[in-house]
Image 1 (cartoon, rainbow, N blue to C red):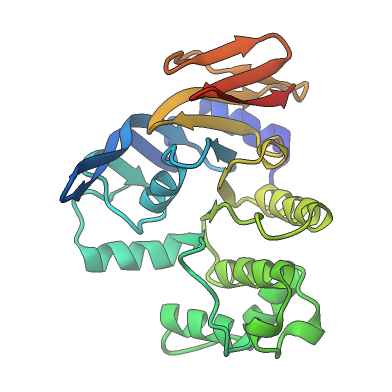
Image 2 (image 1 turned 90 degrees about the vertical axis):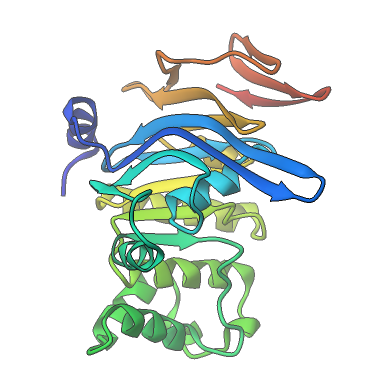
Length: 279
């Protein structure tokens, strides 16, 4: 396992990105007209990064997460993940690629309330490996996600929100993903539990899993090594952590739609509202 410092060197020197997005645009057609969710979004994600995609509700975070997670296709643009052009492959190949490489934790992908976590992980594993199912891998994933053994056989509808989340992480881990993607995963749990789950995500990242998390919460965002700020479907700013732990704006920083930079804070004004993220 590489150290954080070692991974940082690879990120800076490597020419090959895990994820490449170029001019990704997504709009939805409705009887009353088109709704644009993403506008020409471009960035790369390298192996071992821990990225937070940040923005208010309606900024395009979930749409972007679903596109990277192969749950949606963009209206236009270029998307390559792990050297595979995902724009040109058919739906069956896309599903196979997602199953083999990516795990998505999303409000749209709920745990079956009638099944236990062990059963849910078993179903997930059999789906990927129809001819075999390793109970050892299932138990290892539950343990790795921090789910106590006393919760393994309980129907998920009886679990706390924290245990449901940890169960979702275990389900994501059981297929050995290269990339773990999370869409607002920590909204329903208390601050103490949230911080514990963030520590878990950091451990997984240190073990080599690339993590992308969408959030509105600056506490969560500060745990990432890189922050991508969205507003009204546009990528406003790309901030990377420096060696001293402070964030520095990327060279390609965009200022539009009322983005204001003040020393010591990132202040973003949306229709008269503002949120502060202290440095």
